[in-house]
Length: 353
Image (cartoon, rainbow, N blue to C red):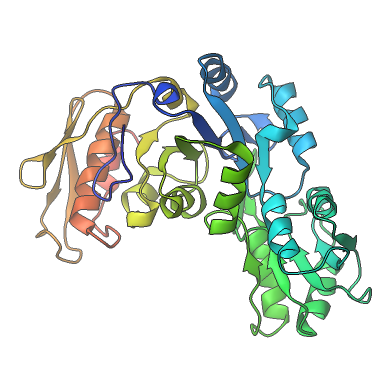
């Protein structure tokens, strides 16, 4: 079983669906994008579940309720119950409830998912800054969110009302590309209030979301599966659990090679078919080159640890993901505790990226 190592992707002789008891799956960019299933996602999840792996869907998107998410997954062909879904709305509602008495009013800037989660914690959603709210909470409200909602949040926050956010993802993937996420909306309110305030945030990669996930799933050997380095993978790092990055969402190979230690996944694969297979070992060293499959990766024109001035090189043939894994080992080892700044363009072009 792989570890959250800082210098190379891990290997696993067993299929990941056998090596871990629970997959903690992100949704946007992993299972679906813009409401449509990501290629290979449905059949891979059905097979993993049939093999005994528990599937839990962990999303920073606070727009929809767990019931709605489960219904959508079932429509796509992945049977799911509301109890299989953990949202940042649930995590932020718990965070607020721990700080405010039951029955407190909370100004909601977001969708129905937030309102349902707040009611479950005995809190009362309100729509106006003039309704004497004890807190403000922001979550993704969809592309049709009225501009006036941000004004309501700004009025309350400027008066000193405690401010919470389900998550601060700046972007969200969709079928037409990458759009602004809840983090962009949070920035609107922050700027409108003069930059003097910051919300308490519950979503990935922060501890409240990890705690919510553990409480609701009871996972003993979890594997975090995601497409984002700064939420999914960092959340796994913060929680001390292994992770699988799939390249179906916002992270591309160039960003992966430049990842700082807390953003480096245990495993890398193209899509969710990676759950059903083992993961190849990356062998070798900085001196001899890093080998995975038929590829060898190394650093050219730069001394180990020296800033800039060199490039990543990959040679060989075979599955291009093996070449990317070898490149990760070369880049991460070179960068150490920082981000790799070496030119990766030619190496990635060699692999067809």
